[in-house]
Picture 1 (cartoon, one colour):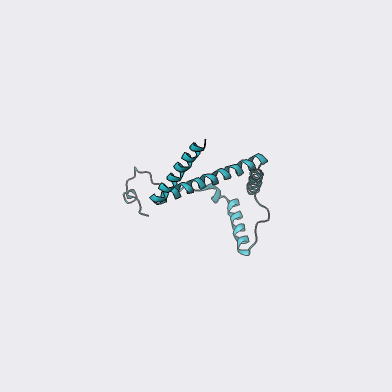
Picture 2 (cartoon, helix red, strand yellow; picture 1 turned 90 degrees about the vertical axis):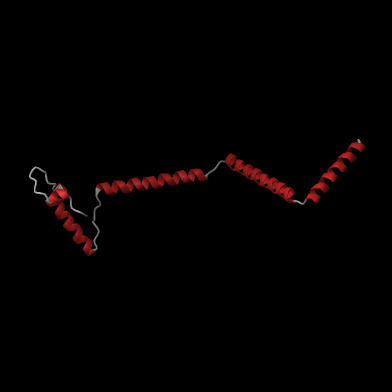
Length: 132
């Protein structure tokens, strides 16, 4: 990182920036605790007692997971009405797909097949009209 320009100048009117001291890191208690944690880490020992905050956070996370699982179970349990509605919806979608397939087949059919179908219909209609 490049150093700023004002450091090179010897202007006494400028206030020089200083690094702030972290009161937590400078406290003797924190240094002792940190030294002890480093030693335990080297030995492979985990701290025996978890801090209260960590316990609370773990409990919250566990409760959240349980709540989420209950919600998922509630969504999985569908009523008979919902199941029947889903079945009907699937049947309607299937019928719609079949109609689209038939329509596409008719559109892709050669011209003579279409004319033959029209002739049959007109012949059946005229036969039905004569019988009545």
